[in-house]
Image (cartoon, rainbow, N blue to C red):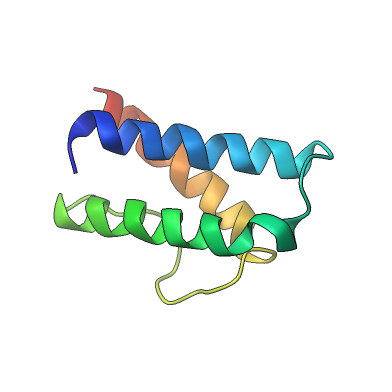
Length: 81
């Protein structure tokens, strides 16, 4: 995954979380795609020896959503640098 693709994935994840939090799609409607995208994002970070704050092996979106938000925000400056 290129840097540009990683940033696009990051922006997509952020957009989904904002949409869900502000009355957009229901979590159940976006959970499968969000989880797939997040797992790809997380795997690419691991490949680059960058870590998120999210515990590994968590599936589902409801409980980990806040953890993922913090992970994305924490990693964003490192990717954009």
